[in-house]
Amino acid sequence: MKAFMDKDFLLETETAKHLFHDYAENMPLVDYHCHIPPQEIYENRRFDDLVQVWLGGENPDGSFFGDHYKWRVMRSNGVSEEYITGHKPGLERLKKFAGALEMAIGNPMYHWCNLELRKFFGYEGYLTPETAEEIWNMTGEKLRNDPKLTVRGLIEQSNVAFIGTTDDPIDSLEWHAKIAADPTITFKVCPSFRPDKAINITKAGFVEYMGKLAASVGKSELTSAQDVCDALVERLEFFHKMGCRASDHGLDYIPFRTCTMDEANAAFRKAMAGETLTLEEAEGYQTTILLCLGKAYHRMGIVMQLHYSCLRNVNERMFAKMGPDTGFDMIAQNTCGGSIAQLLSALDMTGECPKTILYSLNPADNEQLGTMLGCFQSDEIPGKIQHGSAWWFNDTKTGMEEQMKSLANLGLLGNFVGMLTDSRSFLSYARHDYFRRILCNLIGHWVENGEYPNDEASLKKIVEGICYNNAARYFDL
Image (tube, rainbow, N blue to C red):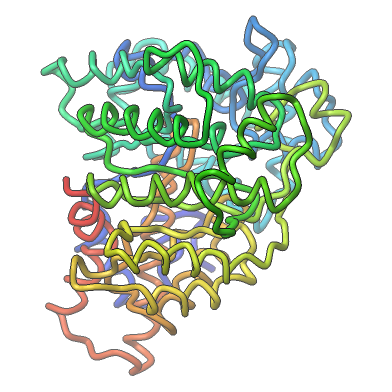
């Protein structure tokens, strides 16, 4: 029997161990998509205790912060919400989480949490209700006093070279400016452009957001879809000057319905008047904005990321109580592969298709995405169109293996830009370690099974590429 989570955790062959320890383990990290706040990086925040890092809770304004992956684990164990996002004492909350985690056999959360305890705190045991108080005391003391466990310390000891945060077009990016001007910050932190609120014309808050977008470009109002395009591109230019390497679109599905600018303008004015749009009107407006932005991304060398197929906030009672991003989302089944292909084709027709990473929350789309990639590659860069790392509910051991197998079967795994945390936690860099072990184990099996030669130079190039080099090239680092 193997020891629990030893140095060869998840590495089942000698080749896998060699690939991980000699090539993957010490490569720098490119965390090109995450949700950590740049303000906390600049201020070098220090956390008071482990629960503050792991579970978070309620902000003074009534919104919530923390890791909704962990909240879902606790809810699945019948834990009362007052221990999950509420104001119960921290140790009591940790014990409730420990009780839920003990039941999470086979869940990546079990591995992530214990990897984090090992990596950042040197704890060789594992979290249970019985060890929770010991862990609470030990981690709390270190978080409050160890210079390596401030926000910047966590990033530096994780060997992070680049962080791409997620930022609204109207954001002033003041914290990014302060980070860029601080010579003591040795890693690169850049904003990513997230224009969803300007695209989701049928969702609540659209009219109010248009006022904020107008103000961000010095206008009293926006009166047309063309105005929206112009405002977004102006803000994108600002983001680009601030080092932006990527955009990110988190849409329910990716539409494609061509219309004239006059038709898009009419749909915009109708929405601003509070009238209900038809599906055709809404999708025409959305397609107009996506095409406008896609061309701007290409001109500025900014990567376009498309995340889709999530059904959000399905528990209406809890959404009304807690708001979005609190753990009440699920996988959707959207048949929009054809629309994505039409969007890429329309951009390609004029030579303006940007580097693009595609993520579906539905793993049933893996093969469809894998075949779509090959339709739009070019000589601009190897792997111009990417099948994104297993996302959200799919970043399990099984999900990562299936995404990489699909990419290997239908494209070129060796050009994959690799893992990202998509996280709100500064301890989540341990997920890169998890991914790299799974990657090396997968490749190791292929080599030892005679499916790929034991060619040291080629294997080194592939593993180091997926871990760091491909992303560094792709994002122009």
